[in-house]
Image 1 (cartoon, rainbow over the protein chains, first blue to last red):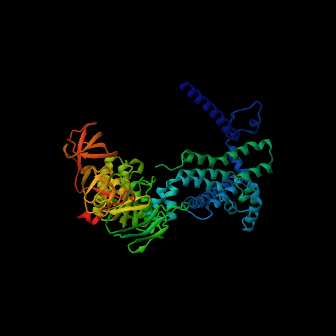
Image 2 (image 1 turned 180 degrees about the vertical axis):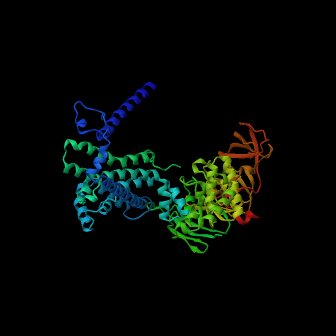
Image 3 (image 1 turned 135 degrees about the vertical axis):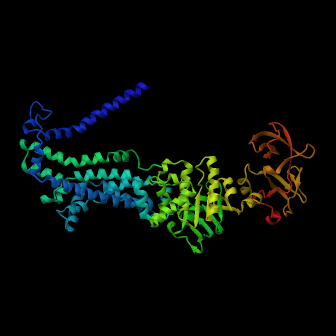
Length: 278
Length: 361
């Protein structure tokens, strides 16, 4: 028996190691390339490590385009979006789990159905709405068009459903109204789920490319995704640009990496349990 | 101070045909300790939750201090509830758990501190105030739950089987603490339990429930001595009351075969078949000549008592004896029934045939 479980474990670890390498390889490649010269990147046979790390590539990248501003735009919009998504989703998840009203099921199902629509199908109507609101080419336009998230609503609903009924009843009999129950019981008890949802949503918003690229035109409103792409397409894919593009990509990834390091405890907790334990 | 009046209270869930609570009538005086007791599924918790406002009232009226509260939400009912599984907030410390209701009511911070500390002192929780619930034992958690209830000086305490998650020893201890707390604070309390010992020891009045129907309301003594029907007679008291078939003749009680059991406990209008009930402690040992023979099936020695089990004309019977009696399995003992301790029930309606007034004399 022990032998079987041990060899099984070894297979697990082997698979995990292979997948981890596959996942992490592009990232490592990007980091290394950011420190190479153009010749080193395209060297045959392959040079793994830069012979002389070109730290200047980062400064060079920032000179080529305002990547700092793009990263700020992305971080700023993503934070604001996540903030509103969590507030709004927790409110609707509260209603969906704690209140009884006619058409509750229908409401939840219709929310879910909108998730099944291909994103591209919603671009045109969304574009028209954003345009009519006069929010084209603004960060506010990006924020407002993203603050309702079915994914967040769904996950928050699942998390809220795990909160024991007695907790809510205890809060109610202690004099709490709906808002107090939500703020003082539900949200703190689902903290790890909220962090997880927030993190996933942040990454999603930070990486969002197509939609922002449609509604944003002027360079000062570019998100990093849009900015990187425009830089890439306008200045061409000449070999001597590659180290700079890689350096810019490294800068773009940094906020996400920092966030992951800071929140990984919550992230793992949120995935492995519901966040509610007596 | 809280007076509660329930008038024809009933509860029906959406998709069910039958009511879970039928025509519940009860008037609770200020400072009373009322216990709802009954087997699981009898509707005692549902009734409590209706009083708390956690469950809607589908029929009848609920009055608190002269105000009709049917549609008033829980937060405005000025009551505090203690739950079976404590329902402590895991993310808050003991202090914050106790202070929860006060904070919701925006009480000043120094007042909260003072009140929580006083409550913690009463419940001996002072050294645990900074801990989280998961770092506490069951008894301590239960005390925190009680603390959360008493700190607000609510007019009414509702307790839903608060002791059933505790071990036997702790349960007795907490029972005493709750009784003392009630004596000290005098707050009207409604307490739900399925444990008849709790009901008997704590209540100023007991409400016995079965299948959503009130079976009897009375003091523990009344309920024990004058049960109104066979359910109450069998539910209250351990071991349960003995029942056997018998006959009422104009001047005595007999077994179905005509053998004499004893004198009539009171004048009774009805004649003929009846169910005779007698508590185990009202059966005494007799001599061979006058006693009724009983073959001992088995015995239970509890230290303070000796329970003897056997069969009398086909009906199971248990006798409660002093522990110094030497009774062994298979032996034949002779018993007789303490006069005036019989309970008589109609075999069809199962209602008592004794008029309470006559019995009380």
